[in-house]
Image (cartoon, rainbow, N blue to C red):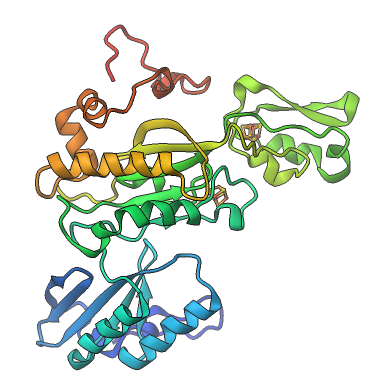
Length: 355
Ligand code: SF4
Ligand code: SF4
């Protein structure tokens, strides 16, 4: 029996949030299967079942949308739902007779059901221009544009394997970009601009100097300000978080990089970090056509050639990166070589260099 901690500190114990059917069959599940795109059933040793209906969420949710979702859960799932790590909503249905009416209601409300098995799950993303100060690109607008183009891969299961896409609007990477099959990362390409008049008024100089992960910021006592050593700057924007007189956003030079081949799963092969495929594409709101076209191309080339179950990174490792660049038509440039001043341990210096 689970003993719940008696405290008012922190979140409620997860046990209280579990549907009764999961509490009754905890740790005694026999198998699960995907009945159709977006609908899973878990069957317990006792014969009891629970259905999960996966729905794509808009990620940044308005209060009205949260109320709508909760209202649906109250009517079909005794109030039980959960959010996955990719911001899918999963309605947890324990009464089988409510499954089809729920699917009908979701359809009528325009909430898409899918994202299970060999499909694109909901795209996880960060705050973008809506909320974060260091964003080099928008997140929700970019995701909407990409997903409108790839929507068919969410509601069906016709891809070779799972495809996880993530967006982070700067290289602080609040999204899961390092471990996604395709990752879009907003990048700055210029050091912060320093407003020497405002720095002494609004910034604490030792804190600003300490905020730089590469030690690129030095005090500038003459102006009671700071200066940036450009060769050491990696355009992370961390100093701007500490000092609003050092803005880094730049409409001309900011843009989007695309990385590929990451995964968290340790099925078949070890987890993988994603690697650079496209160093920069322009920020072109509201529909980012260059980014959308490139992502679609990568998905389609992989979908056409990968073996069943083969994730993006596994496929690239099998065919080789040279062939990946050739098949996708993406140019391999000097920007793909890691020659940042602090990357000496990873810098490939031998004459045997191959990409
Ligand atoms: Fe802000 Fe960067 Fe995180 Fe986006 S990824 S929310 S810009 S810190
Ligand atoms: Fe340092 Fe990042 Fe600011 Fe560049 S952008 S000076 S690396 S904190």
